[in-house]
Length: 234
Image (cartoon, rainbow, N blue to C red; front, top):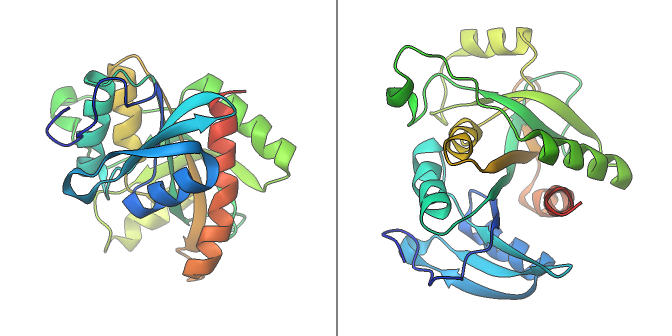
């Protein structure tokens, strides 16, 4: 048990999927895991552990933003022995060829700042995905026929962004999508010698203004979760 995770020793699997929304953690656990049991509800941040094809898996919410994810990822890695973290979440598309419902496999994650920035000081650390997970996720997406893109994303530390100039430069430099957690997760995984990958569903698009309804989001997010699970245990 830690300050933010009320799980007992042995309750957390070595492989942890991390949606931002705790209710999405509940939905994914009930839909994809066998015999899921709730292992955390501290501050309403739900976590569940069950099995997928005989493999132990925990699905635990991270909250919104890098600061919130940093709390849970640190405790999962440091105190509960997690070895693999896979973010499953939504993202806003930034490139014209990226469509709604497409899956983004984040190779790298750029950011203006993360909770780890004070450690690196003047260094611009380059957070990246685990190659083995990324390769397995690409294979899983191809096998399922899911439209997907591999490349860099942007982890923002603000939701209501007012920097159209920055968005323009990121689009110019090939950034596929924007979300709010991956850069810190990749950094923490590297620090703790763990594996990490973000598998994201494009739920809206910055340039076109398109967005999925809540019903469409749930239907589309199933592909993302299955790709994450198959990448964890290829």
